[in-house]
Amino acid sequence: MMSARTVITEPFGTLPDGHEVKIFTLTNAQGLRARISEYGAILVSMETPDRHGRLADLTHGFDTLAGWLANGPYFGATIGRFGNRIKDGKFTLGGKLHTLVTNNAPGGIPCHLHGGTTGFDKVLWAGTPTGGQAVELVYLSKDGEEGYPGNLSVKVTYTLTDDDELIWQAEATTDAPTPVNLVLHTYWNLSGDPTTSILDHELMLAADHYLPTDSGLIPTGALAPVAGTPMDFTTPTAIGARIEAEFEALQHGAGYDHCWVLQPATGVRLAARLTDPKSGRVMEIATDQPALQFYAANFLDGITPGKRSVPYARRSALCLETEGFPDAPNQPAFPSAILHPGQIYQHTLVHKFTP
Image (cartoon, rainbow, N blue to C red):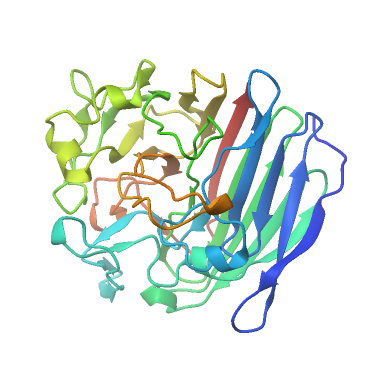
């Protein structure tokens, strides 16, 4: 059942170019509350109750727009035009080589990450409240932006239901073939206490395989079974149980920072279940995408202050990003990430919260 409440729209600040930014607050019948910014189509906060009914924000981020403008870790952002990595910042499409900025270098190997220097996380979207507890944000990515071909029209909708689901839905159309892989990059700590580690959280991933990478975190093209390895989350397992294991994939990523191949199915299906034993909170992730990137925030530095001036330490949160395969434009065996004129890119991500 959808709530009939009105979305609250408020000013959030002003960009350096003078444009005003709005923030939208969605609240459901149980008091769960989500806040979404026009800048970056960002999930600014998500408040849910613990087993005792106490509300807390479960996400990393910043208190003010100024903080979000320097959002190096991509907290809460809508990522595009292509989330995750593209090898060497290059791909060939229709016989033409396209060169993108290389803005990341794991293992000293440059690659293109999360849409480039000015990806969708760093632009102003146009937001409009819609029926029920929902807000729609639109953005036009022009031909040549960050090196990508084609004009891409993008729409992202956040909906908070009275069934305690936060739904993020993305759609896109193009006038020329182009890679598209839109991703929501929220950092979660279900304890509601950002000073704590997520290593005691228990994770289940509906995935029998993952994508091994080279030292630059680019997939090799193989699909490796998780069975018998520290990558096996087919049954609920504490994140910290094996994160320091002597295993090549974990050494490349400094911990978990990999793409799991979800069990194939048609439509939206369960992809992950995250549990915090202390607070009792559970978050289930469902999606229609073929893969999920699990990142254990191995590169947070504990220096930059976040909400309430808390410096976010290494592994104080985690990301569960539903997505297409990384580097898909360069890997013909992977599910295609190329959107063609006349097609509609669609991505649904459902977060289901229970105390």
